[in-house]
Image 1 (spheres, rainbow, N blue to C red):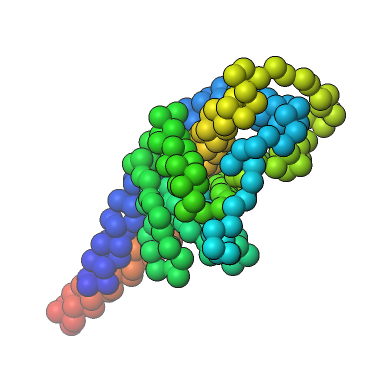
Image 2 (cartoon, rainbow, N blue to C red):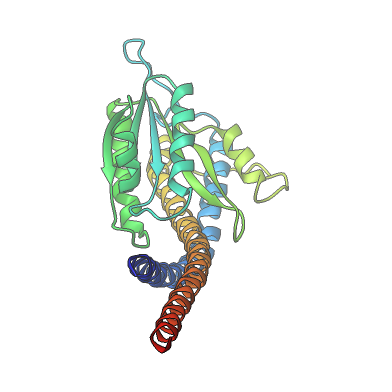
Length: 295
């Protein structure tokens, strides 16, 4: 009887876990659909921003701008790494892959400084040897443009002040329904060659050099457009990371539900066998006792 009670307790616990995993799967599915709609709506817009910035940079040549030069202060270089993680777990290897990619990037940079987006990244890197400058958390909701503006303003202000000399972005890019891969991106200082290589992923056609008239000056127009460009890149990366997170969590919950159902089926089989064995033993004892009394 004690064994049967233990099996019933395990079955009840697995059933409760199964209810949670199925509910989280449904929630992640709804969030994934909403995030995909936002991603599809915003991706062409921010891709156009990239193309416009490249056209301006290619036409302007090399204007005197702090967003194009790398300043060495006292011979010591610092690199900022902006890492996009999630605020919640239970998403399979989503956060682990991002953290691993960030650690690999930091090992190749000089004096890396971390700027984290998401609570899971902060929990991981708080135990790392790298300094954390700031941590942003948005409570697992769909990112908004104001969120990206807040991060972009902080990053650009610290870059202009001289806290670091270059900025790298690490986020999860979604290549398909089930394929998500951590991606590294160089944000600042701007480089026309790097931007051209990024644009080649969207459009293989050779871009024609354009001529622009800058009012009031080439440097002022360029410096005014760069913060908008950085905000767009950060927002697009956050939305894509959010969609990838929901897809990873949905996949993880489907696998968890499948494993729970298999465990529950095994426990039910063992419970029925133990219960049948107990009934058979009781019937055998009753028959044996009755035969003894008749004798």
